[in-house]
Amino acid sequence: MRRLFLLLIMFLAFKSFSQEVDLKKVEKISSILCDCLKLNKEKSDTIRVDECSQALIDGLSVVKNESLKNAYAQKSDTYLQRKCLEYARITLNSFPASDVELVSKSIFDKYNRNALNNVLGKYTYTDFIGDTFEVLISKSLWVERISSSNLNVKFFINKNEKKLIFEESNHSFFNDFYKKGEKIEIRYKQDSKGKLNVIFNLGNNIYLKKRLTRL
Image (cartoon, rainbow, N blue to C red; front, side):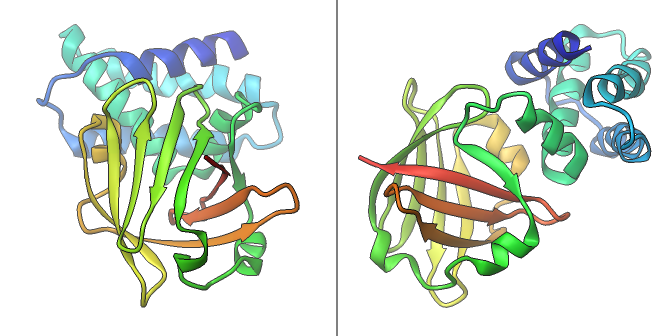
């Protein structure tokens, strides 16, 4: 059910976690859930989530320590958002009012490959769980900061390759979502409403578009 899915997402997003996690087990549990979602595409999102989330529940049933169980749940959620297109699509579709969405490779290919020199400045956008981010695009850095806190994620800008290079974050989600030194290909386009639309190529056929509003 959709309500169950939303509660699961909130649970995964905000619980604290232990560091005693076997990442291979996270990958295995997540892969089972992702395969289930892909194999049941003909069903509605609510039915798929209701049926396939049982894989995560079953996988975590052997973990008796609640803190460790929370850690597995959170890291599985992060892994799925980055590695599983169907999971990412269902997650974002559940929060349609945000400034982020998934797009196709064909749309990505139509966007501007130029460097970011013409769009330097400060921007803002709202992500799918309602957090507002402030974005600073400078000649060498791309920094996103959650407005309600001091948590941020920092990238270096590789001008030659038109890519962002993940440097660091003081938010646990982003440190799991990206790997230090990882290169993310981006392309952008300004629309008629003055929005700066930037698409992140995250791999696994996941193209995440952010609609940025200049401050």
